[in-house]
Amino acid sequence: MSTELIPFDFEGRPVRVVTDAQGEPWFVAADVAQSLEYRMASDMTRSLDDDEKGTQIVRTPSGNQEMLVINESGLYSAILKSRKPEAKRFKRWVTHEVLPAIRKTGAYAAGATLPALPVPTQDRVSSILLIGEAVAKVPGVKAGIAMAATLTCIQENTGLAVETLRRALPAANAPICSLNATQLGKLINRSAKATNQLLAATGLQFRNKRDEWELTEAGEAWAEAMPYSRNGHSGYQILWNPAVVEQLKEVA
Image (cartoon, rainbow, N blue to C red):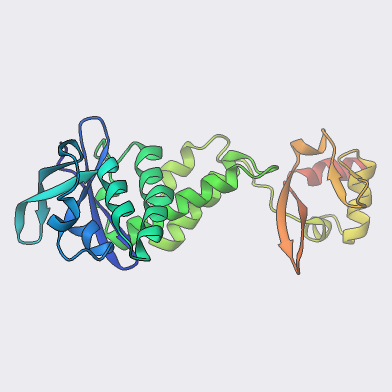
């Protein structure tokens, strides 16, 4: 079993995880017992099968210690036996945050840099990565744009340097679609209404059945339709690449 320790935090309580040679997580039983409010870890593990529990040398502030650990199957058994209200929240936390973080990156078992981060920083990074992945699945949002925004969010929230990763993104140096019609209009000395009309005349957008501006196939090369929610209304806002200005000047 790997000695690489992965610290997580459940409602202010530390929950430590180690991974075996196959990358499967084993949870420190004492941490799980405390989160589920068992009196002692032995009370929680007594009824578990032999293949659901074991021991592992774990690094602690006072030195290496042999600790009781349980695998994923043992964890679910412990949760099912608990009648505490924390059990349901703990299971959701494990299945929605801990396991996806371990299995999606694959980096934890490989000994990447994330496990060495302070617990609060690692938790923020893990959460932002999961949010970034969800944003990338939203219709109209390109994966590269979502990842660029995710890296920026990580840097702003943790201070970690992400420029090396950012430069590795496809078309990292290309201007990002960031201008709405008002901002775009200021670059060509037109109102937002006139700018939208010019974009339509150029064949880059059109009015759909909901009387909203929608990108044409040609327009998708110059803009992104970004989802938004405002005052109870959800829809898409078209944001334009600054490079479209030259295209509009030719038509104007």
